[in-house]
Amino acid sequence: MQPFELLGAFYLGKTVGSPGSQPDDTVDRPGEYLLYDSQDLTTHALCVGMTGSGKTGLCLSLLEEAGIDGIPAIAVDPKGDLGNLLLTFPDLSPDDFRAWVDPAAAAQAGMEVDAYAAAEAEKWKKGLAEWGQDGDRIRRFRESVDLAIYTPGSQIGLPLSILSSFAAPSPAIRDDADAFREQIATSTAGLLALLDIEADPVSSREFVLIAKILEEEWKQGRDVDLARLIAEIQQPSFTRIGVLDVDQFFPPKARMQLAMTFNALLASPTFAGWLEGEPLDVARLLYGSGGKPRISILSVAHLSERERTFFVTILLNRLLAWMRSQPGTPSLRALFYMDEVFGYFPPVAEPPTKRPMLTLLKQARAYGLGIVLATQNPVDLDYRGLSNCGTWFLGRLQTQRDKERVLDGLEGASAQSGKSIDRQQLDQILSGLGKRTFLLNNVHEDRPILFQTRWALSYLRGPLSREQIKTLMADRKSVQETETKVRSVEKSPSPVPVRAEPGGSRDRPRLPRGVALGYVPVSGAFPSNGALVYHPAVLGTAKLHFVRATYDVDTWLER
Image (tube, rainbow, N blue to C red; front, side, top):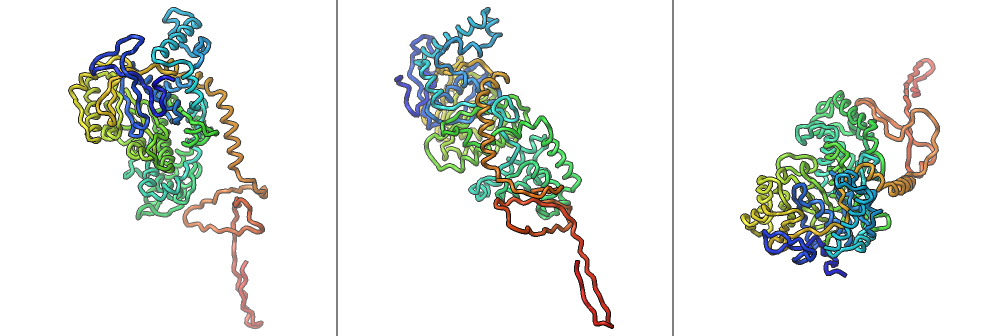
């Protein structure tokens, strides 16, 4: 066994010696193994580096180490790079690489694809050996963790059903007023972002109305699907918002326009993918059906910017709900990794993703959930929020402005943990960083550490195409479809025979305000599963008064 194979120690590379020096490019790789204590990730991490810095390789290596230790992870992938985790070949044979090498790169190298695949296989075998790794370690990684690529809103990979229902929060969250309000606000903002509607929590009447609908339904523990939401927008089950009547606050004609917008979304073929696949369930994303730890890659490269914002908002809310349902622990229970967090956590603007992300950074530690964020654009980030990150991986940066912004943020994070940094020394180190060389600043260590990243177990071929994702997930997709059908059958109540009368509905009918609604009680035995079918009818009543004094008649009849 290699000396770096220790439970709870992530092998990320080797130290580079004195600060400011560059690694000696020899097989021996002078320096000590950089073994990062996985428990330190409970105080979260930030990885910053420009294109070509080795940021992707470092973050993939971190996920590989988590997988080897059996730690599950959810990874949001906006560029398509993280799918490389599935390109792990224990035999390291040219045939394994053949389907995944880039033909354009082979042509640029002046080689046939077969020859290029053989060269890449040899390159990976040699690179792993230089860092004390081999095919057995790759095999151990593949055997320790399940890997899956999900593509929300699409059938490219494994689909996720997002829009079918907005699940009611757990009783624990409903009992926590602050957490409940936060989930309502972020869910509402995410929905309106999908419709490209400005969602100011105070001035937007669309925001206030939908938030009120979610609040009223969720208080009763009811899930809200789009059909239910559209019906509630047209005819809310409540009569007032604040001190105003609903119709004064949001006139019926304007509500109908909003309902039509949501209905167009529901009916659009473009959004059919959001209704298909298995439900967005954090527990299932972290563990397979047999309890095996899973790394779930949520690829969003195919989505528009507003669709990404919507999806990430819903995901963060579900992650918060799952987290709060877990018992506290000081150990690392799971990871949430997000590549290219730029735009989701800005310093001034308030996208719907920002509030739940900040809540995770502040609270996740107590539940053993580690948050790892990465970006190549370090300027437009909320460093006050990122001061909750105890570990900073800093790679080569593009501009002096980037470097100054990162140092400002690092200074704030260090001050929050009661430490100080030598800004001048770190400035000098960052200016001299080479490829795959990173500065590690960890609040749990006495000093910053300079290191070079190890060779990744995964074949880093770059972003995966749609067809490549489809190929990787073909077998898993058929299994998912079968499991989804089984769960659907298990959850569906037994059908109740009803008369085939036209116009029946299982939903309580909604009538215009002022029209009285009555019900004729169920006759006979009540259905065992509680399912009712409503049939519309008009009830007419009449009172007849018969009076005849001669015959002493004075009576009323009602029909």
